[in-house]
Image (cartoon, helix red, strand yellow):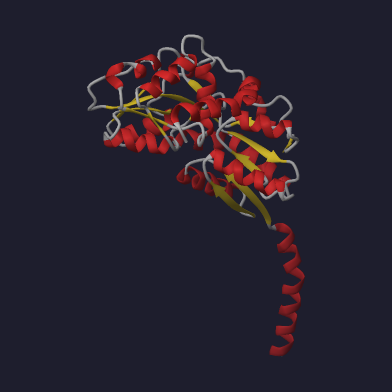
Length: 326
């Protein structure tokens, strides 16, 4: 009797295994989000879609793209989805035919300027770059021009566009602004401004007082100030640069349905509430900004030409490297 029941149980298990295998999906995500935020995003998505196993890789946008391009050169498409800092990188991938168009039903809740009209990528946040200073510092800068003044010599840190996608767009927007331009970067170089690494390094330098002033993305400074760090974030008088941390599906993705679910999730009301809870300014209309941010219409933005930024990206990096090294 026992033997007959065991045989029946094995037969039932053998029949059910293929169904389980078919039900289980996988998703490979490449992201430049900070580690904690990336883990929270994956955890929230996994809670909404428990049948999808998520594998994710995190690094700065520039390093992540170097890894991706090496894989593409080898004929391999590893990620299904990209969630990286800037739209210029997405524009480049789109122009090369590396992205897959997807008309997300969530797009109607977004301003048209925040997503690609053909559905190749969607902005998920509004991240500005401004000035941060240590609250114990003697000076209180209010404009980009202030950082080039003699009294700031050797006291300013900023992320390098050779590493950070947000910093590369910031450079494009600053140098395209007539009253700032490359003269602004020349003054920063002459003022011995420290330019290396990403925004995290700037945060540490300013919070510790090693460099009392810095150029940084808004959420890092505002979020740490709310936790008690001695930081003050300033939206500069001339205007702030903006990146939207877009999400996109890779052409040749092995799990396109799971990828579409991920895109819809990060754009959904729940996904954008998570964005706000992480301390970012959400991209979706109707989601309240987190504490410490002004209303969106009170933030002055610098003008931006994505096509020009893409065309000038390599030349801008070389010119920056000539000024600051690296």
